[in-house]
Amino acid sequence: MSSLLALVPLAAAALVWRLFYSFNRSRRWFSMGELIFWDAIALVILQLVWLIWF
Image 1: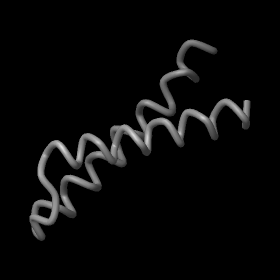
Image 2 (image 1 turned 180 degrees about the vertical axis):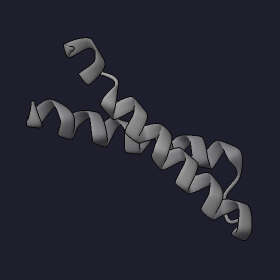
Image 3 (image 1 turned 90 degrees about the vertical axis):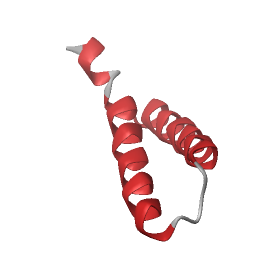
Image 4 (image 1 turned 180 degrees about the horizontal axis):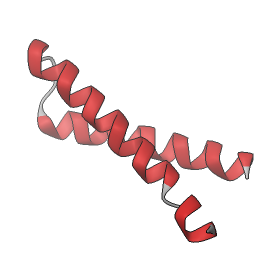
């Protein structure tokens, strides 16, 4: 059970990336590298919040 809980931040980061990607698809504001960069930032923030919460 605890091993599945460890995947929650990763799944949330994947969801954030998908939202970034779909938003950017229509606007073309960012390159793919910038999307990956900001998703990595979001993953770190989600992981830190997750570690504080649990």
